Amino acid sequence: MAWETLSFDAHGERVNLSVPRLTPEQLTAVADRVALSSQHVMTTLPVMDVVDAIDRAVARLLDVNNADRQLLEHLLPVITGFDREMVRSGLNAALKSFRRPQLLRFLVEDFGDPGLLDDFRPRVKGGWTKACGPRLLGHVWAGNVPALPLWSMVAGLLVKGGNVGKVSSDEPLFAGVFARVLAEVEPRLADALAVLWWPGSDAAMAQALCSKVDVLMVYGGDSALAAWQQHVPPGVRFLPHGHKISAGLVAASALDARQSQATARLAALDMVRWDQQGCYSPQVFYVERGAQVAPRAFAHLVAGELAAQQYRYGRRGLSLEETAGMAAWRQRLDFQAMQDDRVSLIGPADAPWSLAFLDLPQPPPPSALNRSACVVAVDRLDDVAALLAHHRAHLQTVGVAASPERLFRLAPQLAAAGATRICGLGAMATPDVGWHHDGRFSLLDLVRMVDIEASAETLAEAHASYRD
Image (cartoon, rainbow, N blue to C red; front, side, top):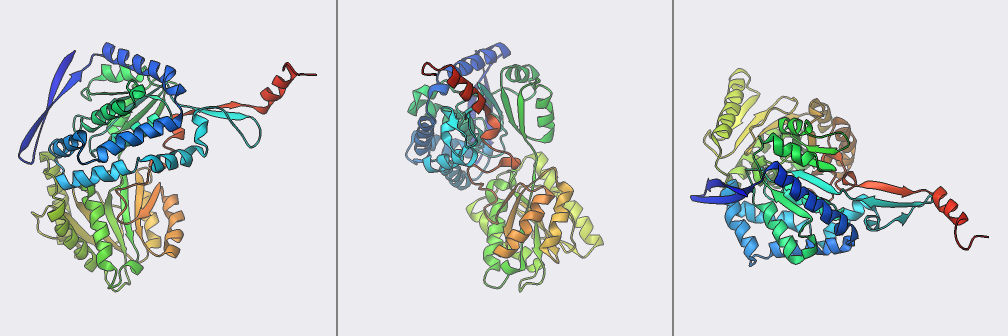
């Protein structure tokens, strides 16, 4: 077997990771072995045994004294460039979402009765139903956020499918560590999960994976999704998760003298977490006029909070491409500001964050990410849905700071505009376990439902040994 070395530099350290480089034939053999485990082991395991195994693996990785947890805390900041404290707190937030109570809620959210994954269960209208997981589920993970693979890996295990995942060259560590820990706590799951790497340009490997899976879940940009879709044969279920746009909405009721600072802190935290690399990260904030604190003043409060957060969660070093993108974003807004006094940039050009204030309503402007956003003033939040609808195909999360009455008045408008998740401001980067990612079911989309209709049961009675 050939091996390749992936090298990473950050925080004054270098990490070299050796990864196996499989051939398409070797990938096919791995996929066959995982599929065999799915057929003979996973289908016979009670779903609660799977839940307990995941819970025990997660408990190990939450233990700060565990060697694997210490490995992740040491290496992930160097591999990803993210601040060490951000990695530590981010790992905790992600892992805590997959303890036993959360996993049970995850199952109930989609199935109601998790026993559907073990056996046929009675239906209210008559007959019986069983949920069958895929013989083989393929995962293609992006590397923008550490621990991202955990979501789909756990989903694949909960539906008792076999799993083959391709890690990104940008973050190839976490998925393999989790798979190893899982195999240690529950050896019966050792062959249910294979974590592999190959360059994204290797079409032969992509075709080999797609020829074996029943379901393929892909995370990445729109171009990556299009490339993978070309390899998916008829009959394979393709579940893409691509580029998204998310926004924050701040009502006048959240901008009085008592609450405005706290609201600004929540907005800044949503920008700072993972440096806006998640699909749920806000790229624009719409702020309502008519409050004690005006939208422009609120933008300056957010800028102050971003500056303060830099001391706790330092922004990662940017690549040359990201640096150029940030400079272009600022130059474009600077040019607009020279022509229109309703546009202004806030803060020094060399700050590790960038904020712009726009005193004119408009659809979400492009963002450079990496702690950059626009604060847009609006007369009424009720006008925002029409602006967001310009990006209906890519709209995902909307974080809201408003009264209960306003929240439930805005929610139908945001849903109609294309939003698939509405949460509180400050919680945009921490979705609930079992959330409907991009508006879809996390578990139900992976299974095949099998029904025994009442007619079959009725006819079977005619052939029973006790028939009259």
